[in-house]
Image (cartoon, rainbow, N blue to C red; front, side, top):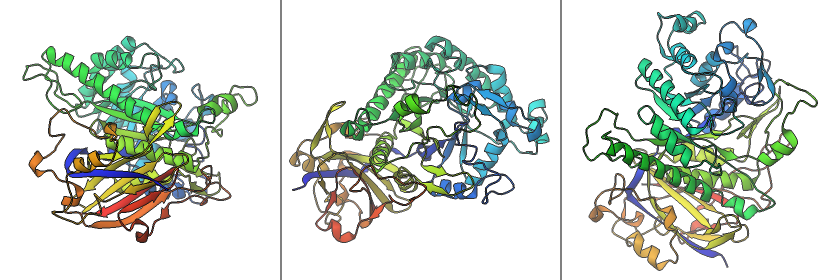
Amino acid sequence: MAEQAKVNADLERVVAEVNPRLYGSFVEHLGRCVYTGIYEPEHPSAGPDGFRQDVLDLVRELGVTTVRYPGGNFVSGYRWEDGVGPKERRPARLDLAWHSTETNQFGLDEFMEWTESAGIEPMMAVNLGTRGLEEALDLLEYTNVPGGTAVADQRVANGRAEPYGVGMWCLGNEMDGPWQLGHRDAEAYGELAGRVGAGMLQIDPGLELVVCGSSNSSMPTFGSWEKEVLRQTWDVISHISCHAYYEQKDGDTQSFLASAVDMDRFIGVVAGVIDEVAAEKAADGGGIVGTDGADASDGAAGEARARKVGISFDEWNVWYQRHWESEEKVTGATDPWPVAPRLLENSYSVADAVVVGSLLISLVRHADVVTSASLAQLVNAIAPIMTEPGGPAWRQTIFYPFAVAAGLARGEVVECSVAGPSIQTAEFGTVPAVDAVVTVDREAGRGLLMAVNRSLGDEVSLGLSSILGSGPGGGTHPDDDLLAGGAVNASHVRVSASPAGVGARTSDQSHSLEQSAFSAVTRVRMLCDDDIRAANTLEDPERVTLREVAASKIAGGELLLPPVSWAAIEFSL
């Protein structure tokens, strides 16, 4: 008999608006992400610009809103000037990050043209590994200044009259990591990032700058790094980055399926540090805003700009790093500096896609503090889209949950909790088997429930009575169901600093989905398979797809979630 779980949500208790930037991705000069990925002039589908049209079609289908470029580790040794101007004059360079040769046949102008073709917002990173303030200012002048100055006029001479108007900029990449070219400690990096950020804002005060947070939550400086860097850069930045990759370790599939527990904790710690630094700045009279959006200064005067500092989770995915380190890493033994080698081309399984779906649930649930995110990467290298040189492009399993979330998890995140069974994991201890999040798009008149069953062996009957209730006036307050339904997963309810919740209405106006203007479930799709190791390949590119669930399967207000499954339940308001 299936385990029982119940989702409860309150449409009127809004956690946060969903920032479209949550559905960003990442293009780095790494392996075949650029060359034979998004750019392959000789491909049958490529136009005069060299962009693969089959890849562009899949990128649009994926629903990516922003793309971070050009790195990643690559940016810490990158000279952006090498990638502009006539291609025959562009120099080839050694890429120390990935032990490759960079031809620079695809550079800044090509990337900007590609994002315009895809309808995507560009998100640029500056090199703070081997470079600094002057080079960052030149890059910003090239991209954002209309003309009439030396560097801006170079862009005009290269064929682009109008500025690109890039609004979001990363101040370096993973500068806490000893693997990073130009690695610094928190104090030195914070000082450099603060100077560079201040200079960039003198050119364009409207920029949103992202300062480097920890490369992962296991770094020995995690927490202290964020605190020091935020203290030094607070007056210039709008976001701090988080990076996290997950993989199955030593055959422990159950812990791997619960990876989002780590992401939840990661976000919680960084949000806490942001609020701590906000309080410090407020005590100094800064008029500072923390993650909750409230003025932490209690009216104190100051010159610092009031702001809400958000988290840019601009690298996240499943990545089998142990395989990279032991099998793939280019060391120079055979081909010392290859051009666009096959690197990080992980083939993703059903289990991997379910984990990606659960990570999306975490990111959306924390939309009150996570203001931007980038699935790393976009094509070929740890990517939802794969290509073959001169051949086809296809969707990996992780493509599907991302595309659904990007297309439908819009509008507002509302309070949602799950009561149900737990599972035991070696890495995270006891965790809920089922996780879920609910969003409502009032303008479109629809909502979305995303749910995941992280149990390796047990199916769960997911109660949807809060959704399939008797209509306006019926049912009870969701808390009544929670108390009657068993153990409550309290960690799944985002509670803001304000008593009524972020953007929430007063308590006498709050009601459950049963009491709301909810109409009906319109569509249910599920990602699952009897073989959780099944994957899409060049030979069988559609082995795994989303499964449509017939309405008859949710009769009685319950949906059966198989072990290792992710579901998207659409409903009308």
